[in-house]
Image (cartoon, rainbow, N blue to C red; front, side, top):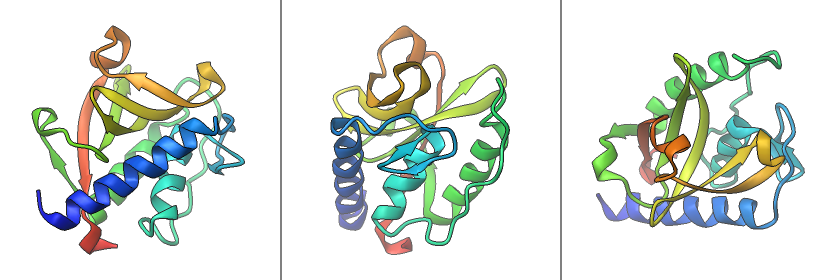
Length: 151
């Protein structure tokens, strides 16, 4: 990891932790501290730090596959700002993607010590999750590391 990636990771984690601490409410398609969903949480946190400038959250309907197209678009967008790393190389500030059924449908930001921040509909707000929890551990599939030099 380069110095730029370390600085970016620490800034990302700090901002994600702030959103969880103020308990940003769950809001379908929201992308701000007034309300967000899991994809909007990721976009909002990263946009506040200069990533994803000009990104428009694509439309998706509210159903069981509601994040499928959005998550696929996020993965494409992440490729412009980040690169995929192996789960064993996880570090603070990395973007985590989770699969429910056959598609990536949840996102979070790693804070360290097996803790991640995310906006979770069941909690009705941004909160912290534990990667070693059986629900999250079996669904966690991808890790992306953002690079500050690509802002």
